[in-house]
Image (cartoon, rainbow, N blue to C red; front, side, top):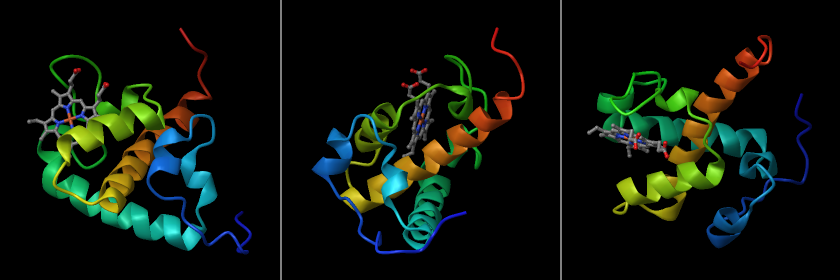
Length: 116
Ligand code: HEC
């Protein structure tokens, strides 16, 4: 599904935060993406899962669980930088990617069912 090629480069930092339209993960090679996802998951489990659960599907007092919120990468990145100020840019990026993977998984499921 993914053709390994010369797209090994990661777009870091400001490019990522400024990137409005493109899904940032499309710029990643599969290997890089897997590495970031694993790192993001680890951090998410350590710092976020007590409120959100591993898959982001724990109901929240203020509304639907994380994985059912229609959050853009920018919205996620903002929440992540607020919560993980002590982490590096790459670590925040990894968590953002992990969260968007939770949300996307939900999205593709929902494609089968019509919108309300
Ligand atoms: C103490 C419990 C708690 C922890 C720990 C926690 N969250 Fe949350 N998070 C919440 C609650 C509650 C909401 C819903 C807030 C709302 O609806 O405004 C939320 C909402 C969010 C949202 C959605 C924001 C939106 O605009 O809808 C994101 C993204 C998020 N959290 C990311 C994280 C990340 C990343 C971490 C770990 C670094 C984390 N959270 C840790 C309780 C927590």
